[in-house]
Length: 143
Image (cartoon, rainbow, N blue to C red):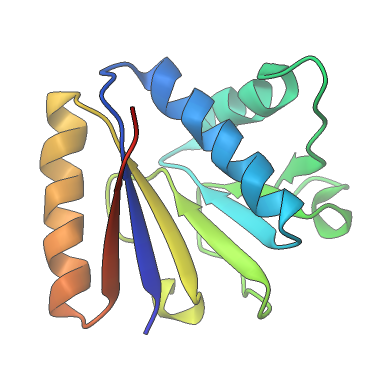
């Protein structure tokens, strides 16, 4: 079973959620893990891609959107379709409102909750579903 870390933010905006996703991606990358950011759609994948380029002037996180020429050669991928097959060092950051099929192939999964009503509703449902499936769910209050 996977360990699911829920990061609970006090902000309500998508921008705050993406900014925290970038910080979390940097931390995960620094620890030597590969990372896949699972997005709801292409628009969110492109927003997350842009955020990873610009979140800090002094940081570079090698990343690419799945299906691009670089996707197989970078440690951080972004996608919005089916989940990739992970290796043992691959973590998943789920930015999708639902739990994607294939989650059980990952040993570590991160979810970000902010105080936007729609996010709260969908991620509460995810929390309950993860628990029903027997995953270890760990909350982290941020700020």
